[in-house]
Amino acid sequence: MAGSVLQGEGFAVSFSNREVTAWGGLALFKQMLDSLGLRQASAGWGLPEPKSNRGYAPLQLIEQFIVSIWCGACRFAHAETVRMDSTLVRLFGWTKAAGHKAIMRLFARFDMLTNERVQAEVYRWFFGKISALKQVTLDIDSTVITRNGAQEGAARGYNPNRQGRASHHPLLAFVAEARMVANFWLRPGTAHSANNILRFLESTLHHLGDKTVGLLRADSGFFDEAILAALEGKRIPYIIAARLTQPLQRTIYQATGWWALEAGLELTELRYQATGWDIERRLIVVRQSVKRKTAPGKTLSLFAHDPHIQGWRYGAFVTTLDLPMVEVWRTYRGRADCENRIKELKADFGLDAFNMRDFWATEAALGFAMLAYNLMSLFRQAVLRCRIQHTLSTLHGLVLAVGGSWHQDASQNKLMLSVPRRKRAWFAGLWANASAPPVIHGLQSG
Image 1 (cartoon, rainbow, N blue to C red):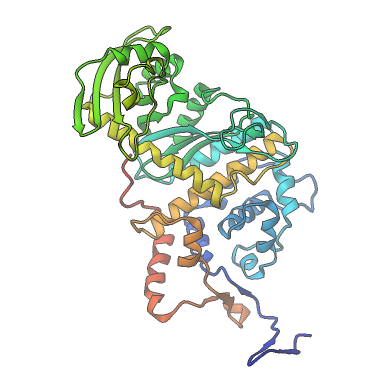
Image 2: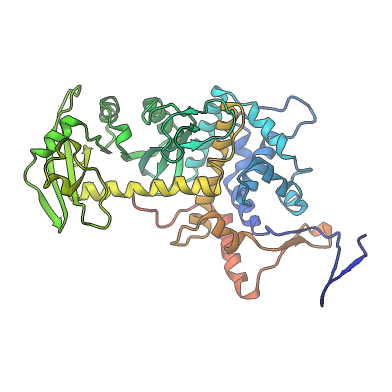
C-alpha cells in the first residue's frame, strides 16, 4: 500500500513511512521542561505507582496529559492524538505512548490526601523556579462548572447560566503579576463561595513557598469576619468587595462627602462595623450613574422609592490599605483579570470538560491541567517574552504548529523543523530562552 498512488484533479497522493509531526514547535516546550528539571523533581512528588509491573511510569502519563493539552486536548479521548504521533513519542523519550484510559487509571489512584500532598510538591517546585517573584498579589475566586451525568460531588447549587443543573463549584487562587494558578480545589456544587476558605488560604501560602503576599483581592462571596480577621492576623493586606446587606445599605444611604472623580462617578470613605465584627474597618464606596454605558454595581434595594438613590449603582470595598480611596478602587479593578484566566482555563485547558466519575480523580486531573496552564504561562513570558499574553490556541499558529520529522540518519537523533528561513534566527532565540533558567520579564502589575 505504501507504494500506491491516489490520483486527484491535478494532483496525486501517495504514502510514506517517514515519521512526521504537525507539532514540531513542542521541541521548545521539551527544552523548557528539561531546563526546569521536571523529571528530576517529579521523583519526589510521590505519584501513585501502577498496580502492574507492565504499567506505564506515572511521570510519562502526566507528561502525555500535559502535552495533549498543549496540542489542544480538552477531553481525555483527545490524548490519542499524541499517542499516534510517533515523532512526539520519540522527542519526549517515551518507549511507547499510552492510551487515554491509562491516563485516567492514573488519576483514579488519587485520593484526597494524595492530591493534597502531590499538588503541594508540584506548586512548591514550580514557584521555586521563578526567582523573580518575591511579592505577589493573590486573587481568590470561585466558578461554576456544569456537569452532565453522575459525577461524584456534582450537585444542584448556584448555577447562573444553567439553573437547576448539577455542577461543581471549585475554588481557585491566581498570582496576578504572573497570570498563574497558585491553588485549585474542586468542591461540590452546593459549596458556598467562602466554604473552607481558611484551609484553602493556608494551602495556598504553603504552595507559594518563600513568596510574600503583598495583597489579597476577593469578591463579595468572601466578605466574612473570619476571613478578614485571619488575613489581619497574618498581616496580609486585602481589598474585598462588600455584600450590600441591609445595614450596609442604610449606612451608605446616610453617607456624605462624595467626591466626584468624573461626571457620574463618585467615591466616599467611611468606617464601618458590621454585626458580628469586633472592630471597625475602612470601607471605600463607589457609585456610578446608571446613565453610564458600563456602570457595575447594584442599586440600593432598600430605597427603591428614592429616585435620586436609584439613579446610581453602588459598590463597596473593605480594605486595610492606606492608599487614597481612588487608588484602592483602581487596584481592586485589576482583579477582573482573574475572570479572564478562568475563561481561558475553560476554553483551552478543559476545566469544564476533564471529569471522571470519582471526585478525587477529577480533582487530580484538573490539578495537572493547572500545571499545564502554569507551564504555558511561563513559556509565553520566559521563552516568548512578548507583551501580548497569547492564548494557547494562538500559540498553536504562532510557534507550536511547526512541521517536523527526524533526520533520515537515525544515529544523528536530529529533529528537522520546517521553519521559514526568515524566522530561523527568531526560533533560535526562543531556543536559547527555553534553555536558560526561567526569567520572567515585565511582570504584570496586580
